Length: 206
Ligand code: GAR
Image 1: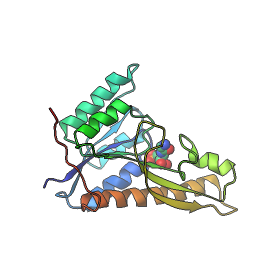
Image 2: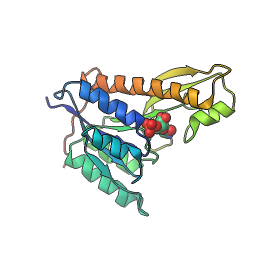
Image 3: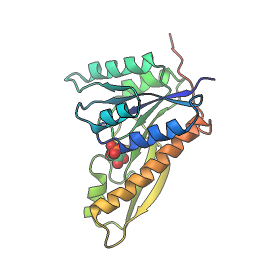
Image 4: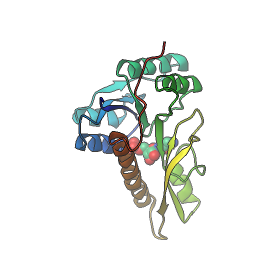
């Protein structure tokens, strides 16, 4: 059995992407492979960081035509026979057509996941940590979920609470989220590598 092949999509800093790369490099190459990192933003720091870590990167910039953008991304996924997509701060929605096409290559299995810094369905979208902070919530959390065409709406796989102490600042609290995200996401990657999370391998459908 070949390694499970993962593509990571990221638009920004890339701390989650780098945590996933570090975990993959720690695991056996026969079990898991990061095919590439894809970004839609030319200035995303994740591109440089991933290159420095020896991982292939692609930039597919936003286009006026969403279909054309997604066709380019799908052709990369097809070229590398990617089994899993890990969204790591990828700030674009995937269309229903895109998701369906990817699913067809995996006998209908859902193999696109996302990490999000809130206890979904609370605080979907952007600035979730800051919004929860300004609402003075006592706790929020991190959600790992399957991806559908909605905004942070797919089936939830794992959630973990992140408590907030009274004197916590936004940067300190944000740091707590990142630590939990990196741990949960790396754990999930390890589960895929070790077959605890089964993979349906890419298979072209006529
Ligand atoms: C992470 O906190 C991730 O959960 C969030 O963007 C941040 C990216 O940070 N994603 C979303 O809000 C998705 N709706 P990173 O670039 O350092 O990994």
